[in-house]
Length: 185
Image (cartoon, rainbow, N blue to C red; front, side, top):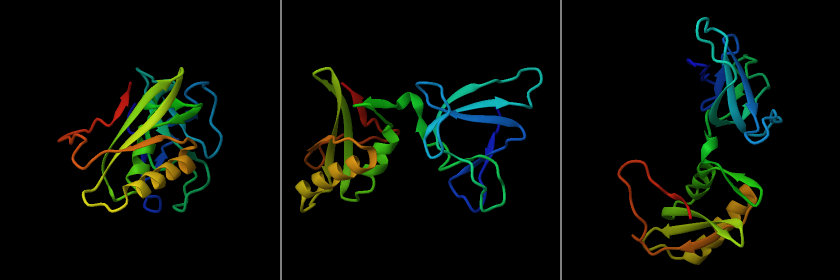
């Protein structure tokens, strides 16, 4: 595909798409329809500069949120807010809500009192459910309060109410490289 974007100084973490060389579309991964402004979807790219080996409507599998307003840097190119936010193939659907592991992790990481966590997706009466297993930092005074805060934050951010369990300190595994925290049971 090639290097399709660049970051500008006024938008750290965002990526402008080089629309002189690429056509970028952001679609709903299920229906294939374009997403509306402010919605996230899958990035689809067409490279205009490849003569002998064109890449047309390549579904990248990357989750992005496009922005179409002119940037503070003066460019009017599509901006991928926050860059690549995750992968579409990691998405799970709970009660009709598309959930990405990265969104759960970003919520959990808001709480400094959580040492480690695990996410389990399981079925109850044919419906998928989400369970968070949280390991509070050793010596944390109010684990039950933490449970309620996390449940509330997930509900307000994603729109579902997960089951939340607490694990004793040191109970969840640690990883040297990439952590495996998401399990489909």
